[in-house]
Length: 361
Image (cartoon, rainbow, N blue to C red):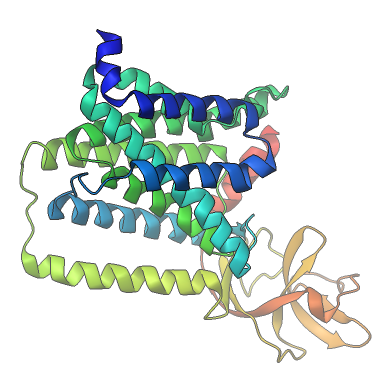
């Protein structure tokens, strides 16, 4: 019975098995990741992708896009609370295109295979889901000797992957491959395009991913597939979409530094009473810096916000609450920007989490 059902799409199943084995043994090989893997999925899509795959209905697509936009805004807005960190990706044009290919082609290919196999072999949904889960796990991380690191990887990566793939199997069975693709692309593409991303530790990352999966599952199960109506009027929808697009665009532009404004949580009271520990400072990249300005600068691995006292051979700074100047040989290239304004108390979640996980480690 098993073989009979798989014969309908035996080529696709064989491809999925081959890809899974190659992933297990070659996932740490840079040549495989940068060239073989994208090329594999490009050839697959050219050969096996057919236009007879049903396009999701407008309602499902609109709701998926809405959910993805909302989570996109929530995720990047969290940077104002937890802080931002530099993206690990190279943002030159060629590197960006390569990274997009490495992300988009496998996502599209795997979700197409998942959809086709599930539609012809629904009774083997668990097997197909397990195989796809294996494709997304970095097995090198599973063999790390440090138990705390393994625990972090388990909670932040493996458990969310399991939850997400169970959801995508459910969505593929009830709609088609396009819905999971939209959700996945909104998760991955911003990380490639934006030069900075919100800071999130292993616990926040895992929790956010699982909560997102549960919310999407609930909305589709009880309001889409059960045909229950979500009460809203057309005017609200017409207003929401433009506003959400504008908000997302402005947020992206802020992250890209178009407005030259960035934020940082204050970790000490060295600038009291101007601002205090737990406040979030908004600063601006500018070339015009004069004594008296409050500047944000890099010192080793630290980002410090102090007042500029004088400019001699080096830039001399001092915290308003400190008795002495900073004994730092500060150069102009170390200065990140000039203080514009601050938001009280908004940085406390970032401080608490930083202190908690610093003590833990």
